[in-house]
Amino acid sequence: MSATIIGLTAPSGTGKTTLLEAVIPLLAEAGLKVAVLKHGHHSVDPDTPGKDTHRFRAAGARTVLFQGPERWFMIQEDGEVDPEQLLARLEGHDIILIEGLRDRPHPKLILHRRGHSESRLDEGLKNIVAVVSDDSTLEAGYPVLDINRPDQVAAFIRDYHTSNARDTLS
Image (cartoon, rainbow, N blue to C red; front, side, top):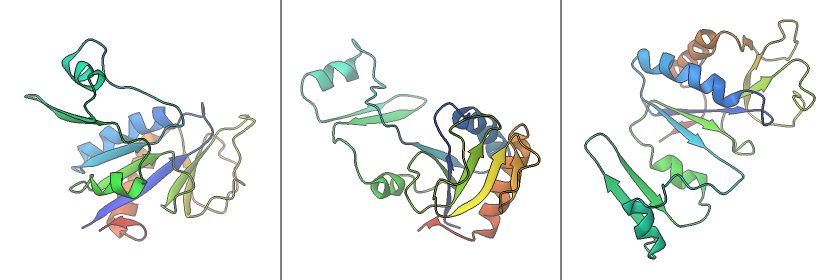
């Protein structure tokens, strides 16, 4: 089965990362291989100044690949690349969760918080498959999942993956 791609979108500060932090272990416990693609709008450097990898980059290496006994990682100085190139590197996963990239046509869960002034359902997004909210009275035209029930959100994602109904990574 191909990887199921599903995104979570909402304004900053709404709780996307916190929700994904709670959902990921539930999906992993269900035996699913989960990858996350986080798109940010700001420059970020995950490397530590003074470490060898950082020193190699500072010396002019365009790509640094680190391999250790528990994990490996690669830092590449390419600027922003096409999300499809990044998704292609995630082959072998069952589910790819995307935080950000709201304009990409993958299926999306919209996070909606009651009282959050910027949290709206009318964002003009395509491929919305459900709303995750703290407002049980919300009438969204989509399934409404309880933000305080990560198990419910994980079950929705598992079911969505099993049905393999929409966007997949081939």
